[in-house]
Image (cartoon, rainbow, N blue to C red; front, side, top):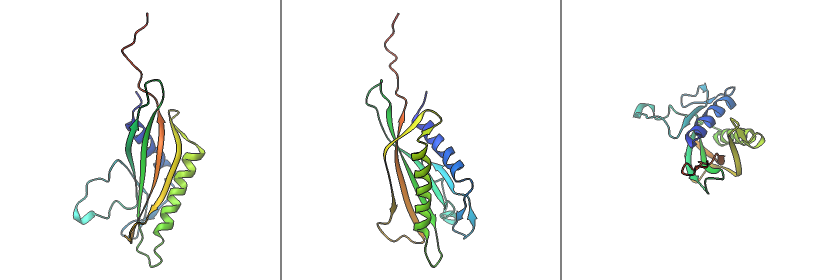
Length: 157
């Protein structure tokens, strides 16, 4: 059975592959790999509040079933966060770069594991409602087609 959780896991794995060759600044100013998390940031304590940066969270949203003979829609929100304490505050450019790589990967090749297919529209943006520097955030909102759940109460023969 194909479930939204399997889609989430597939997206986490694909993002890890996509960003395997990339490093970004963490809160200590070191270049590190992008952390990819399913659903939420891991638990933190007060001393390590900033340890999750840089990150992408693959958060499962609404699932819509239109019937059992058509594919279902599953919303996945990719939340991105980086920290940049440099004087030129280029965190927004880093977020835009990450967004572009994600968009390029999934729009150019919209099928994952031969089962999940990206649907349109794909929405992305910086989160800039207020100044949170040195923290910068953005998102890519996607909808995926996932296999329908077949009826089990009809038997022929």
